[in-house]
Length: 471
Image (cartoon, rainbow, N blue to C red; front, side):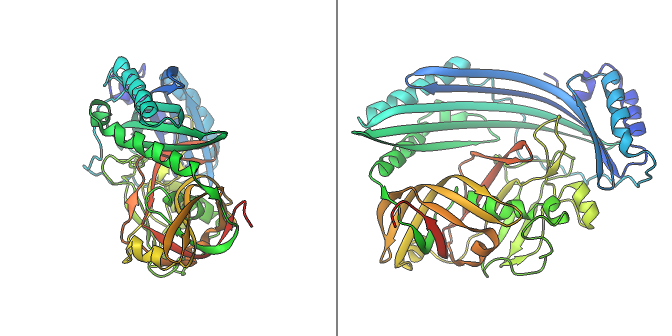
């Protein structure tokens, strides 16, 4: 498969560029986004291969931006005729409009991941053998194991972005992910645990070596812990959040509110607060798309802007938003490399990459020892957030009581309830152990899904509302 996607059109590059230039005459911005994508997934459940899929998709999206208006058209056919029809459609937003076409993004030679397609290596047979081995390993590990579900997934995306000023950039994006879920039972009671890992890498040692065993052990450990869990208390109490994946709460409750479109439209709880204290002193939050091989990283965003290390909250003060090109221009700001889209059929918008909180100066042991009565939330499942108000609800998939500075019994059914900006001001201790999740995050916005990373150190948050089943 060629990575020169322009060569797949049935016309030469000169004609293609002419159609694009004509389509974007008078526009403030816009581009031709061409994509070829492949994806494979295999799932093993209840002792057998239960599902498998492979698909290939390619096409283009043509965008014209005029002020706040956007004209967008897409097609799965790479032809001059299809592009001409798209040009006629998007040209509607520029009729009677005379804009100044924005400057092209700066180029960079930095590349954050390799080009290799992970779908073909290892082979289908080797992947099935891996899933079978994971299932057998976990069932032999503990008689309480009642169900094992394991999935391997890979994708390979090539994007080519061409602007009316002749600027052209390309990115080749591999991705892999492995997920393991275990259901353990004792009598009539059943509980689950899970583990996942991945990134913009090949399957590597996880398939050929014994590295998958650590992930399987972690999924089983969580299931067995939950099997012993007691009902969660309800009320207002101090909460300690674990490091790594619990950063998903930061992502949802704070990160979305710092995306440029919500702030330009003033629908975010953080709108108009640049320069203001929006979190406790010591809280610094960044969005960093430049970490090698990470799931949320992108060498360039889907408008062609190189990704960046963007400080959003610095020592409690709001100092920046995540921006695509359109919202940055309308707000008089600079694009930050956060213009992302699910694929060629979708328009770009401000989206997170790897969003995390930096380390503080407290050890996890100090933080836990400081709490007389509260809960320790180690891992989260699903959650809901209202961007406008900042209100959130998150369910804990692994949590414990804290009593007199010591970790106590595991609990189940705990829900953290609060308001994002308010919760950030309730952070009283920041750990020295910030880390990213293991590479499993997906983020939804306006019907589009993109891969992301989250992370944080251990945190103490004072007097958070905890929903539980025990008064």
